Image (cartoon, rainbow, N blue to C red; front, side, top):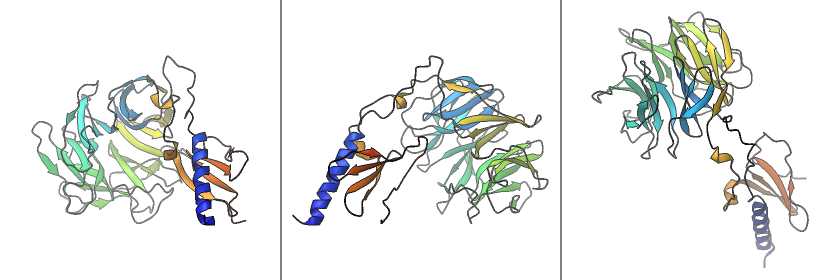
Length: 369
């Protein structure tokens, strides 16, 4: 047998043994909490005293004051991007009940979802017009694979494509005649303090305007998620190094900062009646414009937390993300589930090399020496 083939067999054996040692229970269950437990909250939507958000792949309903959240959806696929109708009766969201990501609505208190889009292209629930029509983002009607905003009337199903290329994240002023939107659409680049050519900007387009007007062109970084309130546009930008909530006049002047978080970025804000709910880390926060105060919303989930149960993994190899052989062939370093392990080629111990919990490691290699 050749030396290279022998080494390959040995390496495969080491990986198998290492993976088998990882094949035990994935996580231990925390002590039971009958009153609920903490979750990872995303995509909040606010209307009055009601918040709808996503967690565990489902939508949930909770008071703006916090408390125990109630689950609205239970489908095995993911439900995201909820937006609440102006009258507070419906929540629109993106779901994958039939496979593709399409837009659905359901009563805000829960009930059977109604499919509203049939685009066979990813459709993202985005906003509502002041007169109660639903707005979503899709590439379905573009000649190039770029997003556009589309309005659909829920009564007759008639669609209106807004004639703005690469428009997303739309919101209207109180009259419904002026649209504030983001161009270009989100580039899926999560680099901090990104200033590249696809950095998002806030734009304005209204009645009587031949062309849209850029409002945040004075800054090279990211400006997005526009929200209108009393003739000011609230938006998210990283002008101080972290994504925070800022505002500007309707013409882009008089820029002011409102939240001053550092570290975690503000994400997915939504404004209702002078308050903004947003995601920060794993939590939801509420910012009150009048008092200029931001506070954590204390939320717990009434869930069985199935993802935290101890379970046996029949295929631990699916968690292996990288393998690297020692320069002398004496051991192999494995990266799995964000942790680092070293397995010897001969006799010896299988060792976990990473010691710090709460940190995700990847692509670990041996140095040449």
